[in-house]
Image (cartoon, rainbow, N blue to C red; front, side):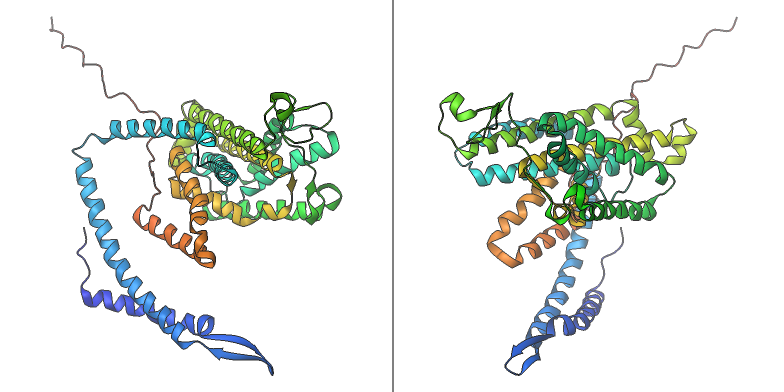
Length: 435
């Protein structure tokens, strides 16, 4: 462990950071335009510049002390890990967290504090959980960086919207079709980029995401362009509609049960649909990780050359990882389209890909529980900070930075293989007496 820097070194480092902040703060903070009777004029805000420079100086100084404290804590934790049997304990804690989380999610709509806002927030969080699980297959398990995952989200959403508009198909029939169409586009994308890695792969996937959005925006005869597609039908339950006036051929929930009509019934129904989708996706990914294809993904993530030497087909592993992740993205897009009843290109910008990637990285690449925790954090934190109005995104960014300083590998960073060789080895054969 390296010795801690001296106070003089810390002050010098903080002073350099403050100098850079001063150069940036003068044009961006210190100068502003003011609309007067004589037109626009330039005004100065030098006290604000001083506050910004002082904040950077103090923050840099405190960050140095905080970094050293966390490094010492990590070193102590590493030493303790060698003597404490934490593996089985962590698995039990994870299993208990999953059971408690599923139980809470199942009864949450019936709790006293639950209302329209809570249901809508929970549904949004579960959509991002499903998207995070999809990208976690591509990035977390197979190690293939994807900055254009929002394209599969958009493809799934528009597939349902167009099938409902032109073919009259409903939600339940369009749901698997949306996932399959998104997986087909993922296969077509993955084939020409199999040899790309790292930054080059990231650039190509980023371009695919933007191309998809631009095509949707400009193909007005099919997608409606910037006006989007409206009138997307809501899902029903075996012909039971949750609308006040059900479509022709369906019966309404409130007329069938005699319960007074409430729009919360439809929101609860949508909440349970996305909850079931998330649980099914989580179970499917968990099972895939224990099959040969899942182990091939993890091996590909660790070392592609070693994979080839062991006889694993990297092409099949990459294509299947892209297709599986995109299918989950397409399912999420189909549900988003049914929930909103309207889709437009503004819902599928690059910021959505960045948020989904942040969920995977923040939760710990490869960890399903981490994806759930990170999705809840990223969706709920801006809502809880809504009281701070314009400063809530600043608080959100500061919280993200603090977490990444505290846990650089993610909240539940673990790259342990799914399967291990047994520690129990057969005893060596007994020595035979020479005749």
